[in-house]
Each structure stands twice: as C-alpha cells, then as structure tokens.
Image (tube, rainbow, N blue to C red):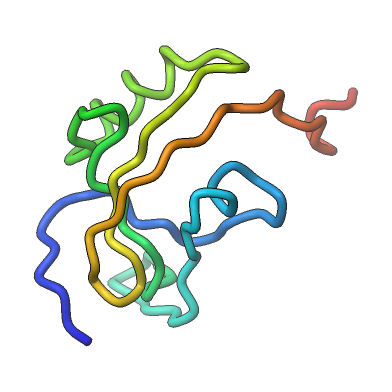
Length: 102
C-alpha cells in the first residue's frame, strides 16, 4: 500500500517492551541509502505528539524536552499500511543503558 506522507518522524527501530511497542509503533525493515545516509523504511511515521506536529527536528526536541517519567503521551501516527492511528501511553522510567555506566 502507498501512503502519501509528506511530514513526520520516521520510526526506524522499536525496542521490545518500550512505550513505542506498547503504542503499536513498528520499525522499518527496508534499508535504503540516500547519498551517504542509510534509512530503514517501512515503519510507522509519527505525525503528532500531544496534538503538536513533529514536522521538523526543532519540534521533536521541544516536545521530548518537556516529558517526565509518568507523563501520559498521546501519539498520532501512520502505521506500516499508511492508516492514521492514535493511542496513549504512560512514560516509564528509561532503563539504564550500557553507555550510562562509567
């Protein structure tokens, strides 16, 4: 299926057990190289978070910077079929990652 999506935040990967997985977001499965950059296409595309469009990285940074553990977040996204979906999730504490330990 083809979807005419002109803006949004492409989801390349989704960690198992993450809030993104609980929302039903999917990572891509089709690597595509554009010049020197490689993107993984075919995943979900996030359109809005809490009603705010994520059409550029400035908006994404502003939205993410306002979140705290326990916040409820509503995400509007296009699934891998191009269907517009919306769901809500409560943000858990982020698990420690190997890079966090020094």
